Length: 286
Length: 328
Image (cartoon, rainbow over all chains, first blue to last red; front, side, top):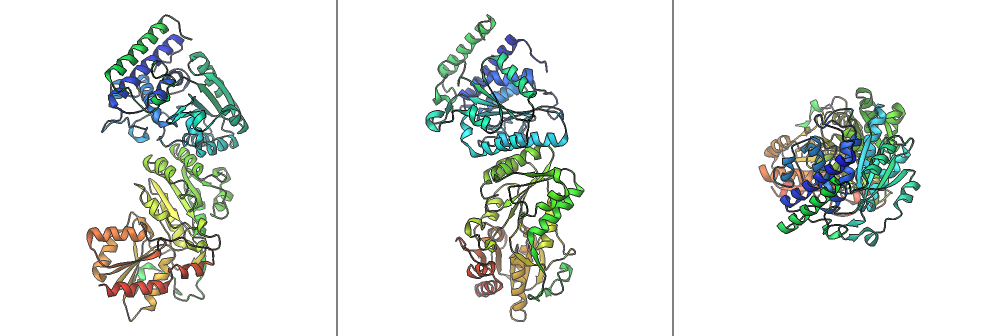
């Protein structure tokens, strides 16, 4: 897999991924839209620039481990994996269908390259911490990247994992939080207030960084810095716009758990993304 | 008829005043040390009950492979899954009321559906936990763990059986659940008693009724069989493995006896009794009685008082045997 270093190329790749998220969700007829679109830039940075992976050898022992804790945003994981070369992009259109390797929520043994099974919220930080602990016991240097959501900070299991990772000084672990302020029932601060998340994690003895999750350069920079962090695990709070790139979805929590259902919605979404592509090509994007 | 020689049970089996006693959890702790010796990937996790679950024996022998989890059962399992997916073989212990009690979903998703190898050890199962009371007396664990697809479920009868069963989990290539009690129980099996995961053993041969038991109630069933000798011919089967159930051994016995009693220190809903009833309903229906917790919570008290109150002694097994024979 070719590592992308040019920011414009990375942004265009993120746009390819957004288009496939929309197409695969429309084809599936169900699934979550806003989260995957919001995290497309972060996933692109990780899969195409930062993480040490070999998509043609998904079991490569020295690979970085990438885990998705909030499994429902898997359309962005699947699209990133397909574009990185783990499997053909055409397979994305089998999402959520009978016999597909692309289950509605990721299932480790269904698809090579998936590091774990997720869906029930709040388990990913702990799974990632367990992997980080095992790698430390083995004395190897692979880094563990865990993508998590803000909503699942409401799960007690998340904080058990956070406590464990700090207690065992798992500095080979970076958790990147999809801070989009929405969950199924509404705005996170209305449903079950989470702020200040940075202070909460600092109080749990984590190193915390906050970035604009759509600023490719800043995202990559934060990820690289987290690799050099010692003694503490790192949280990167990625502030993102849910539904990013599709105007009628942006910042609207009702698109948390819905796909584009009509042909008109599909076309509008793709038209917005075509416009976004144009502005990237014309260097108008950060 | 009578005691099966090849079962190699202890000679003073029925000398209830003098038979040696020990905790089943002791067998777990001793096996962990052996497992640590034979496989360097074995790691032991415990949620702040290190001595109580006998995980301390492993901790002392292999401190680098012992992971203290604090009071966090969901984390016990989910961190365990991270270790397992990275090639470790985690043995994860707490009290059964808390694990699997509190973290069933984590076990189901992270190990069951995720197809990872690991062992969930539930200590202090059953009402014989005693004075701690029903909050700490897990009686639902056999039923809830049995519903997890691919999960092996084990309830050893005494210390030696617990050692054998724990050792055997190393060769189970998926999730296992093994439960232990708090109390001391008669040590009536020996190193020579045959043990295999998925295999039930006939300990006492008879022709009038079959008693299928697990955990400490295997001994109570043997006492019942001995007491009824000459009056009713009882066959006692030790079914340490609740899942996968050894249907063949049980059905063959029932074809001979025509009646069955299940006995477990757990709810009669969905555990060993449930498993036996399902197997017989499909293959060879016969009258059946169920010894166990009758859809009720326990209470504080001494172990023997509670077993008496909730109907899980040899005398209760005898009553159930008489009832079921009348229904033949």
